[in-house]
Image (tube, rainbow, N blue to C red; front, side):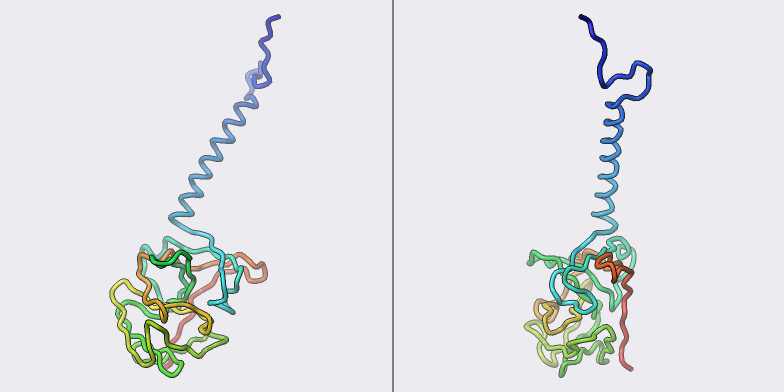
Length: 197
C-alpha cells in the first residue's frame, strides 16, 4: 500500500512541525550568539565569594560587571572592579584606591593618597588599614602607568594590593555597576570616594 502521508508534512501548504523546529533552533543559535557577544564584550555576571567587601557586598551577592565603558574611559577612584590576577585562579572584587601616577602610603591605620589622608565613607567596619607584605608601614609607593592600587572594604580580611601589589589594566575585567541578588539589595552601585581636606 502506497502511503504519502508524513506527520511532518502539511498537504495544505502551511508550515509543518519540522519547519517550526528548524526555525526555533535557528532562533536559539542567534540568541546564543548575541548572548556570547554580550558576555564576552559588554557585561558579565559574577557571584561574590567571601567577605572582603563586606558590608557593601556580601558573600553570595550576584552582580553585573560593565566590560565596555572603560575601553573608552579611564578608571576612577572609588569604582569597584572585578579582575583576575595573572598568577591566581580566582576573580577578585575590590575598590580602586590609587590610579597611575598616584603615591600611596599607609600610616597608623590610615591610607594616604598623594600625601592626603583618605576619607572613606564606604568603610562602615574595620576602618583601620594594616600594611601588608607589598607595602610596609610608612612606605610610599608610586603607581606605574596602567597600574592600580586596590583594597577591599573589609580591611581585616581582604587580600588585596597590600599583599600582592598593583593590578594592571589588562587584568581588569570591568566595573561593578549593578547588583541583582539578593532581592532587597537590587540596584545600581555608584562609586563613592572623597579625600579629607
